[in-house]
Length: 440
Image 1 (cartoon, one colour):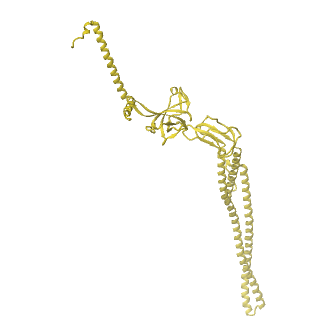
Image 2 (cartoon, helix red, strand yellow; image 1 turned 120 degrees about the vertical axis):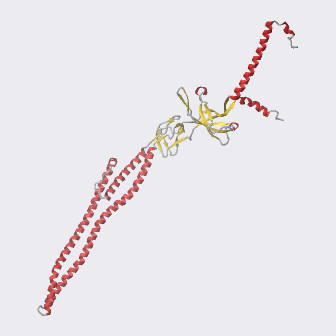
């Protein structure tokens, strides 16, 4: 039973050795296959690959489109850019005719200089400075205004000097009249003193009959007249002194009235100067707006004026600029079944369809925003809108930068996790197992 089979009795030694070698080779092949499958399963259970969600999208501006307008009616003087140009912040887009604005600003500057010169003149009047110093800048900007104010200053001082001179002359006359009155009264007092003694002696002599009565009456009449004149002189002295005080007050009043006029004008001038400076600031802004500049770095999307000399109305959109930042934003349409595992911050690979991915590579980015609800496209398909931000704005090879601009289409792979190769291979089997033999 365990001996050699009948056919083996007739085999030669060589045939018997060849048959043994063939059987051994089959066993080695089977062992190699088993070991290979085992090694593959081990590798597949350990090695992980990226799990991605793919979607189609397009490059969109990272900020809202910038619309450049004119705030006032204007005439186009020159057009500095064309559609598709890359512009930097502050770069000129359009030049607007500034003739009217510059003329208004010039008039306001002249008015400001005139008011500044008048202000210096008024301050000099208040401190009675007959030789004020005008700033060199003002003298250079408005020599006529400075000269005019100096002439006004001299005229004002001449008027003040004239008014004071008249009042001083009147005061001098009143003082002279007072001195004359006092001198006359002194003379009268000098005469009245001995006359009083004479009257007293005459009364004694008349009582004794030594002097005629008529002589006494004459002396008394003369004394009464003299004392009456002295009394009148005292009353006139009071009037003269009151007149002198009034004349002195008129001199002070002339000076104070002069200063009051200057102070009142200085107060109103300050208001006028503030109004003019505010208007001048607005005029400077209008002149500055005669060059319409780009507010951002971006690409000119549209230029809505075509000819030099064209008249544009206020608020009309003149130039549209699509902002360009250091990163791009891509809006990707993701199917509802694929959005569950997408999270902000997940990495993404952005392939711009306008450039060959195999030649120029892809942009790296990350998820920054996921739509709160689905939206529909023109064909009625539902999707979530996912926003990706890239790390740069161009593709390149061999030092050549290829710009990526809003509107370009892109294919985006969002890395949502990692899975082993074995899990990928087993997924269909597990799905069939869970769904098979369940239907009625």
